[in-house]
Image (cartoon, rainbow, N blue to C red; front, side):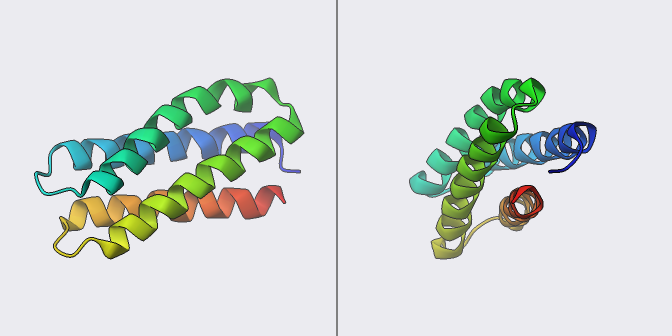
Length: 108
C-alpha cells in the first residue's frame, strides 16, 4: 500500500480536480443531465471520502477509491456519449477519471 501521506496528497489533488470539473459543469449551459448527475455525485462523494482517507484504514480507503473510480467511469462514459460538449468540461472529466484510475491501480 502507498504511504498515507502520498495517498493524502494525491487525494487532495483529485479533490481539486473534481471541484474544477464541477465548476466547469456549472458554468457550461449544455450539460446532459446524466453527466451533471455523475459530476454532482462525484463532488459529494469526494467530500465525504476525505474523512475515510484521513482514517488511514486501508480497506476502507480502497473501497472508497474504488467507488469514486466507478463514478469517474460513469462520468467519462456520459461525457463520451454527449455530442457537443464544452471542451473544458470534457477535459476536466477526463482528467478526474484518469487521476482516480491511477490512484485505484496504485492501491491494488
